[in-house]
Amino acid sequence: MRQEKVFSHNPCNTEENNNDFRRLVLDDTDIVKPILKERLLRDYMFGRGDCEEAFKLFCNAFSVKSDAPVCVAVAKPKDANSYDELVYIINAIEKYFGDIVICTSIFDCVLVIIGEKEADNTEQILLTVTDFVKTNYKIDLFSVYSNVVPICDIPEVFARLKGCTEYLFYHESAGVICENLIRTGSDSNVLAPKYIGIENAVKSGNEQKTEILLSEFFNTLERDAPPPAVAKTYCLGLYVCIIRCCEAEKMDIYMRGIVSIQEGKSFRQIKNFIITQAMEIVHNNTPKGVAVYSSLIKDTMRIIDENIGNERLSLRWIAGSILYTNVDYLGKVFKKETGMNFSHYVMEKRMELAKDLIMGGKKDRIYEVAEKVGYGSNSQYFSQVFKKYTGISPLEYKEITRLSPTKQNNKRI
Image (cartoon, rainbow, N blue to C red; front, side, top):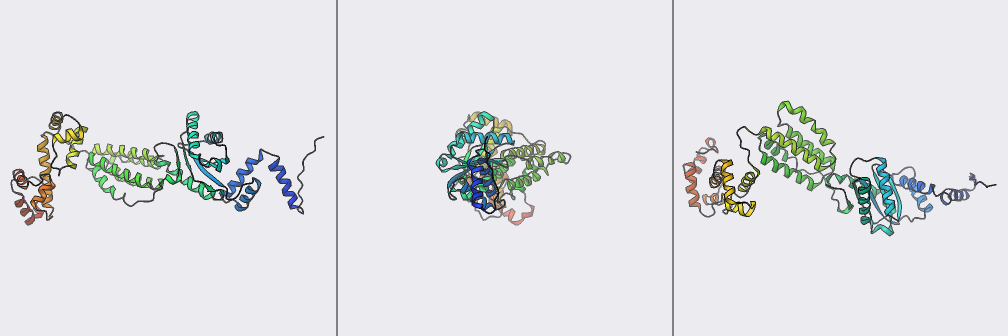
């Protein structure tokens, strides 16, 4: 007849009872060991009950030193996940890591504590795990791991790593990265002032300026990498400014886009949504009769604006050094779309800029204005062109604007 093991509670013999508990639960029951191990570490990590006592019991029961060196990693599916997906990830981690202290699902991710033996290979093994779950389960995995730390520090380390997984928001693709390489940003005060400029560009139907300003906004946001919740707040502020420029009857439709931003899973997704909506409104706001230029001519006009003070600015220079296209072809297309030849267009741009500089009340001398608008040291030729364009010399124009500034405008005299 098989003799049953009996665990008798005898308050007078605590040491004997503890030994009986150890034999019954730890020594004789392999199934209970990992469950108890996980429970004790969870209690310690989350401060449940007497968490310090739980950690001591864990160390004593499983012969682990309280300062034992370990590596901590958190693996999180990129998209919405189910409990089954987390189980697949745990199985993959256990398949490739031989020295695991614990591997368990917590919240929406998997925590793995790796022993010292494989700590140096953590990144490579996690990359293997990432490829495995991608190939076999179609799961995109993002993993963050720590440097080697004492096991007693795992509550703080896990909290840091879990916070780092939020920065998956900025990553175009899943991957494996050490926490030291993730730049967790902070709130920035340089974004809000950009709202006004973007709103004005959208309202006026200026497609080129809107594209440039939106690009600057999102590049700054991605560079500073504020917490995702803060980034979404900035994006919401921008979006509200943009949709204020739409037609009144379409406001309700665009307002629904706020939910798309609030629920956006990635920076790229939100960025593309806002840009699409903005350019749609810009197009609707484009004044009637305003020409719609091809991308080639848009690029040419942009280069002209950026190099208006450059003496080398010419159709041949743009075609050969920047756009790498045939100069004759570019000249024909430019004339066809703008209604004027290249040199005349550049001259008008330079003369309007010169008028602005003279009217601005700055102390620039005429030769300094000539240099700023691309005529170099040839101020005499500049004066001749200016007089032909406006009907008066630069000095006369300057004197008129000085005596009667309120009557002057930027129109051609």
